Amino acid sequence: MSAARQATKETEARTHWGLVALLAALVMVSPFSVDTFYPSFPAIATEFALTDWQMQQTITIYMLPFALMTLVQGPLSDALGRRPVVLGGLLVYAAASVACVFAPSYGALLVFRALQGMSAGVGMAVGRAIVRDLHDGPQAQRLMSTITMIFGVAPAIAPVIGGWIHVLLGWRSVFGFMVVIGVLLAIVSYLRLPETHPPDRRVALHVGELASTVRVIASNPLFMLLAVVTGADLATILMFIGSAPAIVLKHWSLDATQFAYLFFPVIVGIVGGAFLSGRLAGRIPGDRQIAFGFGATIAGVSVSVALHALIDSPPLLIQQALIAMAAGGVQLVIPVLVLRMLDLFPDVRGSAASVQTCVMLALGAFCMGAVVPAINGSMLSISIGALTVSVLAWGFWRVARRLHGPW
Image 1 (cartoon, helix red, strand yellow):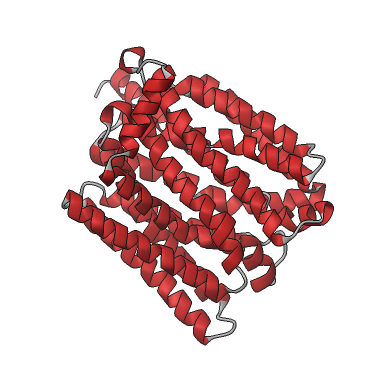
Image 2: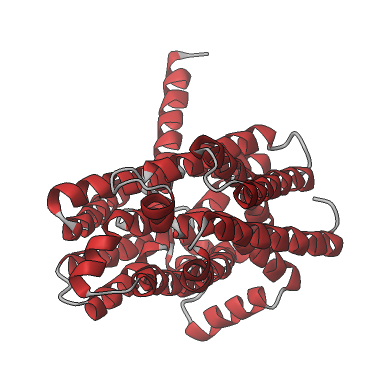
């Protein structure tokens, strides 16, 4: 191989991994916006005289606009290109985070959290379309898995960083950290994010046509069934993540700087599942990988239910291992299903990614806002909630498989 050709390959490799890291960072904005201020829950509740249920709504009010705006961001990226939508979303997110820093009341904080939610999902909605723009088949699955492995660090480090910022500087500075994230990512994206959706492939920017596209996607029974599967499967882990303040501060009797005790097992499971998913890409049928993932998740939460039913205070390490097992199983399922869903609408992948993300996050918002406050009183009830949604996800997948056939 000539020196020039070798240099070209090295440059392409650096560019590839740089793009992977950037896309992962864009997707990380959302979990950082949720998890970073968990350690501040008691302080915010004290300052504004809030109940636990009211504090939980700072998550719900974020996730509902987050879910709904993905219906706009994906179609906009199909019409305007990926870059301008990502850059605009990041700038709005940074401005909303500044407003959260100076929120004078609980009501104001909810409004600004909603603005954060409206913009934070741009990386998730558009990033998946970028992956599909660039790659097909097993290569796309590997790239999606690699991004997820990097992204998976966010839930583990976000509450740790947030805990220390809170202890040192107070809860408002935690939102200041989000401002920094938004501004830095906007700068890096402006400099490094390529446009992967050229003008000749874009659809007209017509609200009626965009709405019609979304309606066509949402009326596809197989697509919507798979979207519900991804949402219910993700909800398995959201039962634990949404209950994080109760689990860490009450059930495990830890302090505000020790949220990693919960989130580290989650990240181990996510990264492990993503790594295994990338290794299995193209080697085994997709439905076999999905079945294996559901098996791992349901087994993990089933043992957790049995353990908490029989023992008052099970060893923490065993609880962490079971959460990691469940998270790993979820990560084996979702990337395969997402790629299958995008392949159903190859000409409008941004719109397809938006509808899928909206359904998944809407289910997540319902779980975080309505289900989690009702079940986070004990580890047993949290585990039962996780088992319920994981079994529902598996059942819906079985129905979808009968409609579609083997993958």
